[in-house]
Length: 340
Ligand code: SAM
View 1 (tube, rainbow, N blue to C red):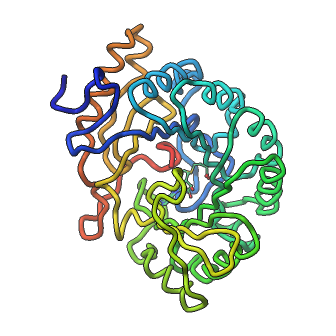
View 2: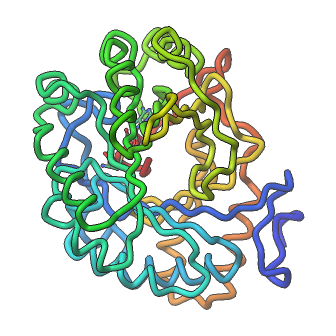
């Protein structure tokens, strides 16, 4: 086995740096119905052909194997996962896999009104919805054409369908939505959302990233504290919060989270793997290293061979990513082709 990566006999995934790998993010498509400025270039990206992306049965086989080896948490993402045909059926089949403790999806919400009830009936309990502005014009601008009212309609439908919690992902971009930080924070007073401010990351070339546009989490927090104190919530309040540092405004129903992959990275506790829509396994968002699982799958390999490949990939998981302040380095694949 490659190095001391992991032992299938122990039925768990532990890397060289003693990190237990338990979280798999699966991108089911690189297609998206939005063109967010921070995520992809204006002209879009060349899309994978139908035969290039993993079939659902391939995703299910890999997921079952990963769960057997120690993954407990799966997120479905993209591109926009709800644009892929029969995404709800995939959720349904994943939700039935043994060993899965937490299943979630990240969506831009545009198609959510249509799918929320079916997703809930398929076994989805919670979700993240990306929404970077509360102003319809600004939202249209950042997404290059998106309709904010559809996202709100989707969130409403998800609430009615009993999906909870609903986390709202806000990529904080200086000069774009920094004037809305307080408005987003205030949203949590009367509504049960967890609003999560995410630092703008240098992922993919030709997106509109620059160091000046990345607002550090502590600055966002400071701006909210000019309005009201923030009550810290204990880390690990909910199993599903990952690296978010959580707070509450006094008396608020909802919560506020800060995710700081750049200014205060969480690499030492990173428990993630990413599977791209074209079947490449990535152990670090910022690394160009990928393991081609699709080729292996389609060569008629055994589960043992797949497990071995998984172990080998995990043995290459870097201790730290390369986009930490001072060592700024972009990864080439745009976010839409990795899966955020
Ligand atoms: N289409 C879905 C959506 O919009 O939520 C899922 C895919 S999207 C790539 C997943 C998440 O990545 C979104 O919350 C998005 O805001 C985030 N994201 C994309 N590019 C990013 C960047 N450069 N920095 C930080 N977050 C980014």
